[in-house]
Image 1 (cartoon, rainbow, N blue to C red):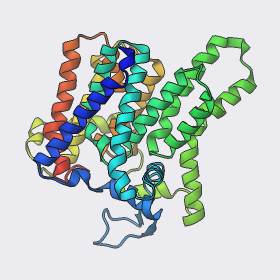
Image 2 (spheres, helix red, strand yellow; image 1 turned 135 degrees about the vertical axis):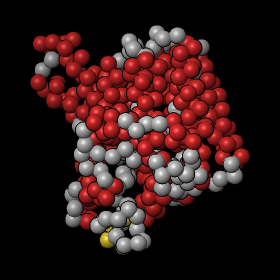
Image 3 (cartoon, helix red, strand yellow; image 1 turned 180 degrees about the vertical axis):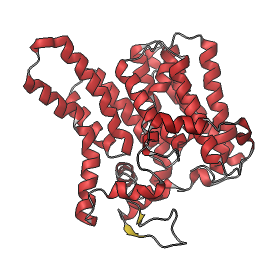
Image 4 (cartoon, one colour; image 1 turned 90 degrees about the vertical axis):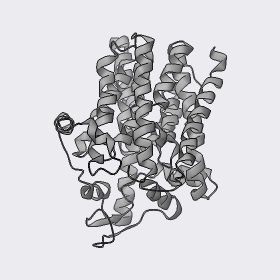
Amino acid sequence: MKKNSFIIPGLVFMAFCALYLLLSLTNRSGLFFMPIWDIEHYLNIAERGYEVYPCIEGVHFPRGEICGNPGWFPGWPLVVKILSFNNPSLGIIVLPYLFTLFGFVMFYKILLEHSNWQKALIGLLALAAGPTAFYFLTGFPYALMLFLFGAYLYCLYKTNLKYRKILLVVIAVIYSLTYPTACLLAVVPLIYLIKDWRRKNSRISIGRIIKDILIYILPFAVGPVLLSVYFWIKFDDFMLFLHFQEKYGRTWGVPIGLIIDSLKYFSLDRFAYLQSDYYTFWAADFVLIWFGLVFIIFPPYRIKGELVALALLLYLFPPTTGALLSIWRHYILIFPVAMIIASSPRPFWLKGLYIAIGLAASLYIYFPHYLYGILI
């Protein structure tokens, strides 16, 4: 079945695209193909670069001192600009489909390397049927990140791969330039290295440890540092990215406390009203529950410890910013959750039911809200 490692993800991709494209056409909404919300900022960066200017009361939202587009990382706009041959408005629509396909192939291939094709298929379905997986097909950078995530793991665990270390550095740098939480992926090679050092015990030298850190860990810091240096040179503000985020209520918070406070008011009644003023809360609540319960329902974990650690970090980190706004799409990046479901010894019917619940939430709650222009 390994020979079909392209056919199965290809079929899942076609079904995935057909489902959401059909629903979009049925709802007669063009928003699925338009640069709305953050996509507009990514497109502006691709077309004109970074812009910073004072906010004008009553014109810019949300209110604050700094307006423009310094709150978004440059990796995705650069990829769009380069691969669309300087036609970003077209590239930002088309490229997510290509990277979703490549991402599905890489994700399936990674699962196939460590399990059979049935489990690999379950993992891919768990990924594609997530509550907000449709964001892969939008102009956000999530499809690119899925592909890079799969490519990085493939290179990391394929120790006999030619130019492996060079590829790892290049992928890590591009990944770090793409999204604020991308640096958290560094926990994977960190734990991988620690296990490798422990196996070698006294045979490992200090020089080798430093070399490993330079190759495996530090590249994940390159993106944020380069962006900060660029902002310092162009706008005289090394911390501009963080200063810009303040108007979105993003400071610092205790993740468990914020999660508990949100879930205290969870109610299924909130799902009944598309135009509810509480959409931010229920949209956050459901993904907090769906992704969080995976850690409780599907142990013992049959995936590598570094991937479980990454999943926990990605689950807890967004609430540390003190806000749950858009957490429903930030959680798309918890790719190892699908791996946990796939590799779990739990019965097939339970996995299928859990995946179906995620898909139902996407089709009946999150995607319609996106098409109505409500879900940020």
